[in-house]
Length: 117
Image (cartoon, rainbow, N blue to C red; front, side, top):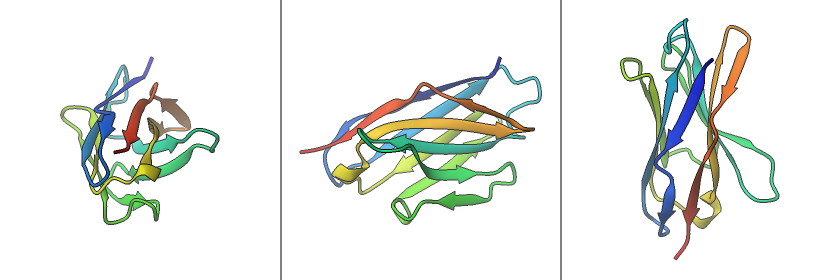
């Protein structure tokens, strides 16, 4: 069973930075085949894509994070990262990691990010 475990969330003041990590395990096909994505869901809102990175390391960002967020992956450590800089209160949400590959999708349990003064 494929498992995704996020970490790195927490509280940060506006303008601060956080680095989220998502470790993937249990895939018999390996990590590198998956397109990995970071999503977020704020209270009362739908879950939305933040950033994604393909197996070929092509990246895609939502407009809200362009220029501030960077997604990357380490295929040796089976981990995807989301570096978030210049954080704003509106970035407050639960951040989820998702793996897509070969018609299957897997989600992590989420990590809370709170941006406030």
